[in-house]
Image 1 (cartoon, helix red, strand yellow):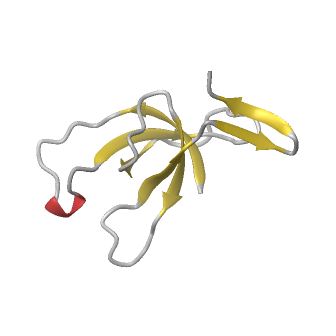
Image 2 (image 1 turned 90 degrees about the horizontal axis):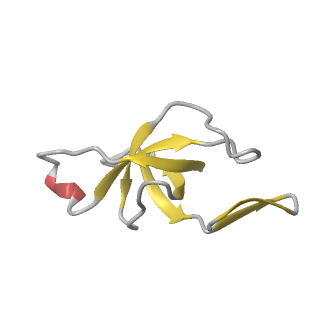
Length: 90
């Protein structure tokens, strides 16, 4: 799983019908120890309603037959690592 920040939303005129009403997001992976960008932005599916600026938990599906490579599985309210809060919503 990857902790990421939502940095944008792509616009698509057409999507495959199997994605239904799900939204697509552009996310930037973060290093969970210092919350700094780490890696290249990518697009993932979101059925939870995350928005720009939210920190999200991404699952790389990579399952045979899956239509997407990554999806949002959680919107983070806070993150604590080794008894230290590294992120908390305002």
